[in-house]
Length: 156
Ligand SMILES: [Zn+2]
Image (cartoon, rainbow, N blue to C red):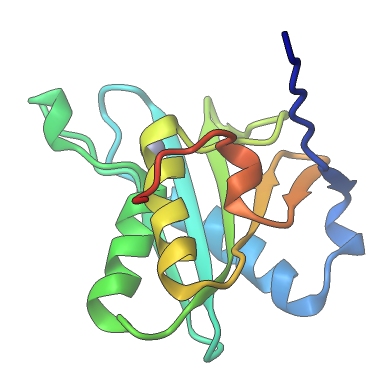
């Protein structure tokens, strides 16, 4: 019998340790939470992505009375990028959430569906997408979406 271990490197940073462009991306993700339509969960998620050409795109969760119809902030943002900048790689994504009048204390992480969706953008471009999971006082930084989805499903 063999055993395999999977490890994930996560840098834990403060806002002030980020580069200026990363701070702008975090700010945009926070701004996006305020446009969330989340009357059912009251959990306002914001995402912001940075494209290789410098363009930033925000997204926020959009819920619906028929629950499966809604979409997460991360996919709202990346599908926007896919529609408007189909050939421009995504270099970074920031995600955060606002609930009960404040930003979440612990870094907010994408659901499994969004991890799979973001991963395919990374696979398509062949370039890693840095992930910033933003909490109130700490930010988890991962070098690639693959670190969020070990043993991921991809085309073979
Ligand atoms: Zn999601």
